[in-house]
Length: 500
Image (cartoon, rainbow, N blue to C red; front, side):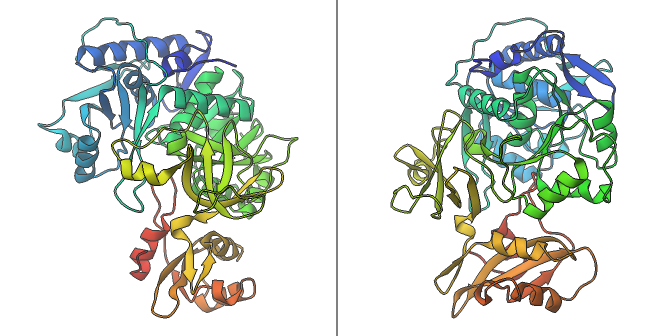
């Protein structure tokens, strides 16, 4: 496997004439030679605009070739800081200030709120793409410069989701990203013959590392639609001969719902389906495998680990529904609150070590003191390892419900609710209670009309009384982040007025 230790080395790992990127709507194919030329030209343009090693380059771009070229160029000339195009002006202002962005890259048209946030504060540069798939910085001077980013240079700055407070800034080194990409290539045995369909946003570590960087490192091809569309997904998969895709369970569920029990044309070429960034219910895993005819491999990732930490392996090795698999090039252990490592099947906090794990949050000594113990990063997730080294997650520690001293994992309640045939989505959470400290409530989205009493009766047959929701909220939708994660504490605050 390639020994690349920076994004520049990853970019040059594949054969020049191999197809790197397909834009299906525009019917554009870009070779690795063309991709390298565009990235290096933009990196040179950024340098000419004053970007130096370590300077943060904010990008507000939709999925597509401009987003990929800008990410790679920014990471090579300085440090990439991709932002969610869906943010509002106030959010953009916060992230631009928090990263000390030196300039902003955005489309020629649109991105009005980002432009307003940057106006008078951060120089704005438009990123153009012509009809042939050539991407450039508008008005940039032509020229070529050489770059040599080191493994310990910061390639990418992202933020934690901020579900429990102010978002923390995560500086990810070139070597972290390269290690994560190598781990993903090894886990799924990716080769130049593989074609990845990228449906995750490219402002998030899932889409950037799993779908994009790992494919580039393997010399494979990335298919990048303008956005995820369940109506065109399988046509694109068929036409582009897609061999795998990675997504959150929300996307898998949308594709499953449209399949209606029949194997979609275009799924025949799949070697595997990957699921990450949110819990995959075991029943959904089984239904996906039956519908798409390919193994479904649940993985575990987070920003602070440059994405992947664990994954269920390819057949013929065992994949275990409900488990996120063993560590993938990462040491995984379970630790108690005092820093002791626990034995198999004992619940505690998941802790990790590995070359893909960041060394700390930026300018946040308090968070670093809480998050690292003896060189182990504390993930904030509760779980246990079985005798075979497979990790099962039981929930976020801050989301555990403490009812009169009984610690309840809300994910267990979610899975029972999702077992009801009328329940499409479910989330359990704790709310303040004068006697018990906290009480269990839940929200569900229904496929067909049912009463709350009926669903609660279903729960009582399958859960101990103290775990059963005492109130059920029937809602039209459950709030999620842009990457499909449910933030329980925010749901609790919105639906029940409860805060933890």
